[in-house]
Image 1: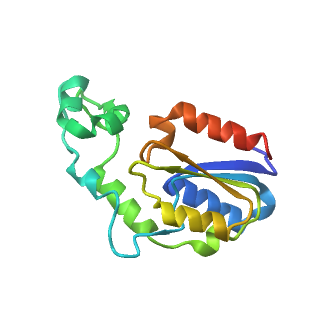
Image 2: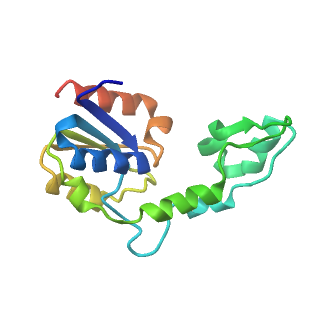
Length: 176
């Protein structure tokens, strides 16, 4: 793309990837937006995405039938339902892959989080997000130039409070 510098925005694992890039290439990042990306994750051996293993792996003859199979997870994963080759409907990912990906990112990432000094926005879902309030407060304290916004939603801050997320990002970007 020919960009020398950019603002990075990432959610969850993408947020971790964004701040890892900023730590390794601080001269290339003008600002950082971290939506629900933890600085330490799974140190107790737990996987906060274990619930995805309860999602159906199968398919259904139409979209509505598959969404019904998702049950209480439909509000979070309805947008991930796609038509498959052959005309059946299912998720565009395998739940086990999501679980395994989460497991592989577990660890202590404080050095990466504090490894850059560009302005940063940390967005946390206050109602069931992955990022605990105590850790978010530590992330702000340990990394100067970090501003915290908590939205009254879950881990999927951008999807379940798009107006609040957009306002937080817009307000932050006006300061950099």
